[in-house]
Structures are given as structure tokens and as C-alpha cells.
Image 1: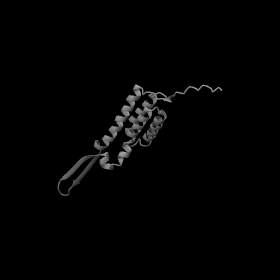
Image 2 (image 1 turned 180 degrees about the horizontal axis):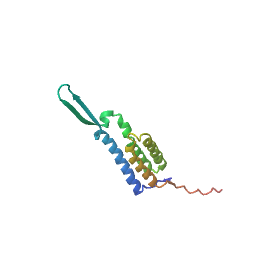
Image 3 (image 1 turned 30 degrees about the vertical axis):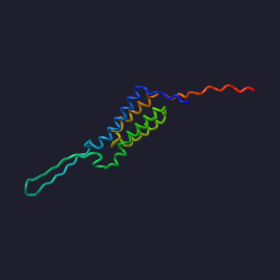
Image 4 (image 1 turned 180 degrees about the vertical axis):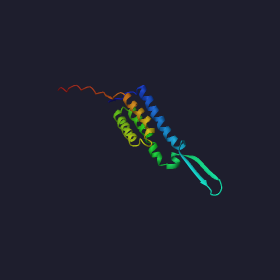
Length: 144
């Protein structure tokens, strides 16, 4: 029988922050203007010049495939929340470590935006008490 520990208040808050930030990353991939566009034209002989400026979103430029990358922190937060709720702290640490490695590898592009999720998951894993295994009592010896 395994005695599953309860989340501490800090772990609940940290998991909540990680889930909200991960969901926010996915939503912002659709709506946040992260690219700027500019086009211009000029004509010879006259002073006519036209410049058009605009913006584009991450999904608009890179397609829906970018959601596989952007949703990694949200998936990691869900897995860690599930693991910690069931007393599987080690799984939480493994997933958090893998997300941290992704942060380092992608730091020059999207990794910096994943960092708040990683920090929140570290806090959640560190704030969750270790699982205590309750051992059943030894049976009475058989005597004949």
C-alpha cells in the first residue's frame, strides 16, 4: 500500500502557473504578432513611393506544425501535474529535466519563453513531499 502525499500549497500554485503559462504560449502562437513585414515600391522619374508594413503570427508564418514545439511546455506541465498528484515525484523530475534541456537547446529561439514553465515545475517538484511506502505488518508465525 502506498501513502500518496498531498500537494503542498506552493506545489499547487506552481503547477497552476505552469499550466496557465503553457496554455498562454499556445494561444499566443495564434494571435501574437511576432513577425513584422515590410514591402515597398518606387518608380523612376516620379517621386511615387509606396511602403506597406504588417505583422504575422508564429502559426501564420510557420504553419500548424509549430504547435508541436509550442505545446511542449503545456504537455510537460500536464504530465508533471499528473505525476505529482499520484505521488510519482521522480517522473515529475524527469519530465522537468527534459524540459530544462529543451530550454537550453532552444534558448536562442523559443527556449526563453519556455523558461517560466520550467521554473514553475522545478518549484512544484521541490515542494512536493516524497512518497512514503507503508509496509504491511509481518504476519504471525505459523505454529503447529
